[in-house]
Image 1 (tube, rainbow, N blue to C red):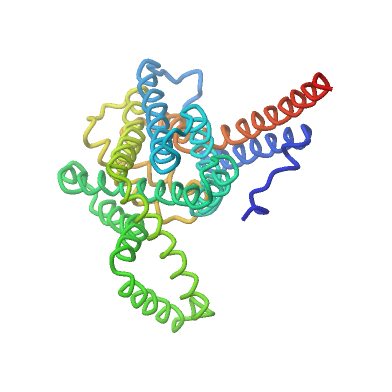
Image 2 (image 1 turned 90 degrees about the vertical axis):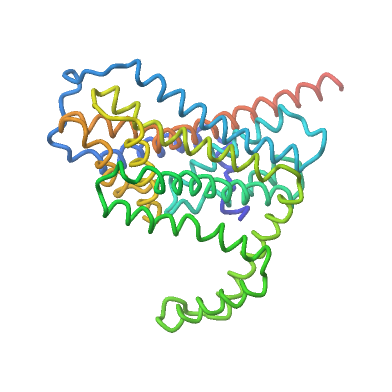
Length: 362
């Protein structure tokens, strides 16, 4: 894992840092073109009329959501770590853990890269020890999934009548199963470890029979180890009074604020939509594309989210969806390299400061 996420060469050589940033810019450009480059009916940019004031609450929602997510990690670090853990250091580590985690989620299929990097980064920089540094990202992800599930269940129970699309609701419910799989499995493993082992064995044996799994024993051992590791982290969280509820509420806040952004983007581009139907549809579509195994759900997200943005005229849909994708995807691809460059500068000037101090002492 350490080798996978080690970027020592990038941090040491400014030229490589610049090339790393340019590579990310190229990835953004290629992805954007693949998603939106074939739009022939988009209105000319100079002809697009935008009420910029409605983009202000969209920006505020994004900033508040990221703040809530960062604070979730700060809370876990301070309550699971040392009682007098430095608040400034906690915010710095939490901020980079969250933003770089989302960067790796955005560039890896099915968002599998974020959590391993977060564990690696926290082990190297938090000073909290390997156990706590592993537990925090694992439960941070679980809390995020549980927070979204909470919102989705409430939306489907009380707001599904506002969506006249049975296929979308059905697909959203199917996607919610993927959201719930790991949290439910880990909760069962936490309180019913023997039953979990038997269930894992049954599932893996079935997958082996249909030739999805090749090495049955190794797969069972690996899955059992991962589930037990998650369960151990959950038990540790639950022993810390009030921490589970705090992380869940902050995760609900993050997902709620993110799901509000399309409404303000639509309104800014002149869409005549009500808040509740737009919010519920956004949650449903987010759930529906969750199981698509592409970086950032590229290819499925923009196609499925057309349901949300279809309230606009055809020419405006392109620009509205581009703005929404910036908040939901491209911004993380931009922030990742920027943070790495800042880390490079910190290391560079820190080394110079250390050398200067040694000279003065000599």
